[in-house]
Length: 234
Image (cartoon, rainbow, N blue to C red; front, side, top):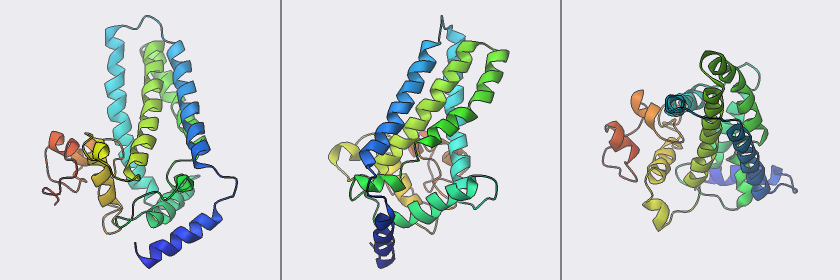
């Protein structure tokens, strides 16, 4: 760890309020997420096979939206409401706190600089209302609810995968498909030389492969299952 990173970590940790609990922070996010998922699920009735198609469609939509949000908002200062705060929190804090030299949490208090604030899930849920209403009027209520179930699930997957990128390495994680790929993928992204151009996905590097922003040169399956392999780095 560089002296600059160490000093930033020390300064950031001193600014964290004494009442903050990383475990409580995470518990709020997942409790809220599962309550939303349960509510959405309770509204499903007699789903037809064709209605399930919205799940993979929404999955890919979320993957590309995640890529766009990371690349164009989290790493570029914008002036519309909320964007500047997102940029500051991500680029000026998260990427100073964690670099490719030191990616790991020292304690649960470090969750604050990694997990989104709990209200972010509410914001994303509200953002999903208009597309859900459109799907309701064009297709059916089931399609709308399945859309919301998938977007909320992908939000929780994002938070979970990001968490796994910043914990200590072990045998299980090192050999767990997708998670091992994302750990190397995200660690490379934290290299400040490439952080604004490469490895923008935080769930599955599908959009990175599609837009050629992955730092490895492989086909889609190879990119997804690359693991810790550095052989194909561009």
